[in-house]
Image 1 (tube, helix red, strand yellow):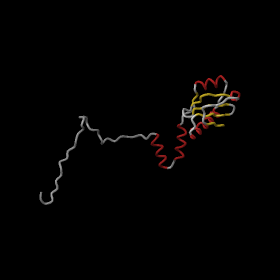
Image 2: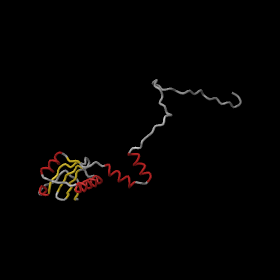
Image 3: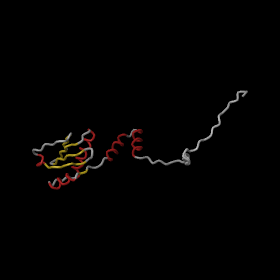
Image 4: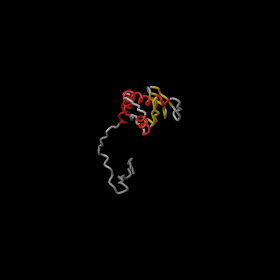
Length: 143
């Protein structure tokens, strides 16, 4: 080894250990951005307000338990769309504050709502409100 010759070790490629063919790494995959990617892009590009509006639209609508539906029917309680919109907004506010179960007073109607499940648990009108004690709630909203 004279004259500054450099020796290189012999290098060979190692095949897959299991005998299966190695994956084709030259193939390009098309990835369709999902909701997470879109929200991340909005945050990065500074459109957080648009993202917040989109998040609001992703929330599930309020549901009614069988018990609440029965109470609404037996007590002839009507919940017009504009009132339901106000109740939904109140539940959204409770959710933002970390409330689990809330009493929503809407006009002549009272609703107990499980915020996490977005489910109305029971409903009553003003007459049934008198003298009642509400337990197992950690918030109240008047709309």
